Image 1 (cartoon, rainbow, N blue to C red):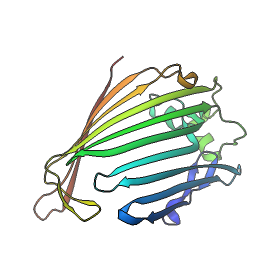
Image 2 (image 1 turned 90 degrees about the vertical axis):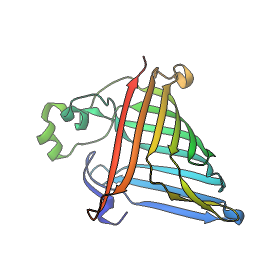
Image 3 (image 1 turned 120 degrees about the horizontal axis):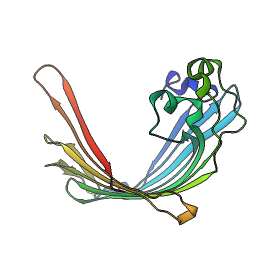
Length: 231
């Protein structure tokens, strides 16, 4: 992003700078290698976080790609707290994650995406919170102590764009969009025991996305989704 977009005055511990980068290399037969990353530096505490990802498009006509990801960031301890507690410093933790995934087009418009992830959460240490967060969150603005936890997760996603239009070139396929919506079905599972994982859940989500034009009013976007835990 631009310089202003990389600055976050309301980050964990106060002002943070978040520059990112992207490197893209195209090979013969339109195969593509991409390396992206983000540096997240906290000025008051001089703490460094960040993430990096490597993606290889090995089958351009089927959008077949492999990816690996690493992140060391601040995450949420719980995602079901009240609005105030969700964004208070008491709900932030250190979070490291390692992931590997694969995506490919099965048939025109239908994509399958599998992503496996290992996550480790530990309490915050050595962070002095900013004055504004002390004023806003008051008693909730304290570090939460808990036993470090590991999560092993797998995500299976099917994306289908109805009557997807496309064109082909000698070594790749180019999607041209569709007049119909895209339906995304996602299944996520926590795998207990693996990597001493404490995650044990099954979650299903269905999402419908569309972009359309209404007369001269411009473009409109539709994004509807629902989900449910199965246990």
